[in-house]
Amino acid sequence: MNDIPLSAQFAALAVLLACSAFFSITETAMMASNRHRLRHMAGQGDRGAQLALDLLARTDKMLGVILLGNNLINAAAATLVSVITIELFGEEKWALSVGTLLVTFAILVFAEITPKVIGAAHADRLARLLAYLIWPLLRAAYPVVWFVNLFVEALLWLLRLKPDASNENSRLSIEELRSLVLESGNFIPQQHRDILLNLFELEQLTVADIMTPRGEIEAIDITAPLEDIKQQLATSFHTRVAVYQNDPANIIGIVHQRRLLAEAFAGGINHELLRERMSEPYFIPAATPIYTQ
Image (cartoon, rainbow, N blue to C red):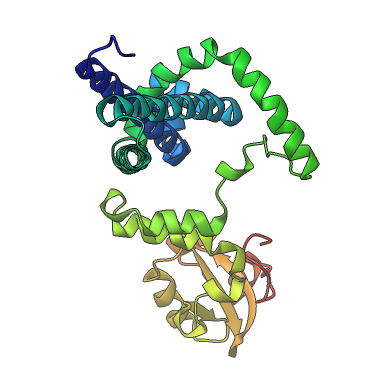
């Protein structure tokens, strides 16, 4: 490279670092992206989100092309730095050591750490954009990636490891869904958030947890004076009213007030009619799970 000006070599080094940064930011953005958000965007017709999902469905091939490009570029950058160092300082060992340290520092700062921090901070947005660039690279390098993956699959087989291709890792458990709701912040109003959180508790709830206390239940004593019963029915806000005999715990039936309308207008309500219009009560064990009920 003696015929190539140093300025061109430094420019080539900058280009190599930029390409390495591209692969680093792509790797992090893809792996840190929210798959559920991408599915939502893809469902609304976002082409970039759909491409990103297709790439994530082929994680081994996507990572293959990213790491292949990144390692080749980093190796080329290290070689180019060695050439520049020799041209500037000769083949001195201290110069080569300094050059190695400098290229390592440059790769870490400009091509690894900084791009990956940016990729993690804006994963969803970058994944949709970078997917357009990774797809052509994946198709162009597919034979090489396929060949490398043969050795990867063989090594995984020797280690008795089997990649999960069923997309189970992207499914959320009840606890994870609860955490998402809790962390939703201002995106979900507090009232709606409480409703969703209560839904997650249904599996643990029993009938006893949602029963109305006996003291708050409006019920009619079938042995009470008829005028008292009529007054209670006239002022009741409920369609169905429980009926007990002497003891509020002794429920003997349920009265549907609509069945008494005709007799109420005719003034013919009496104790016998109430007994005739009562429905048989339905008793539920207090320990019955809500879902079972």
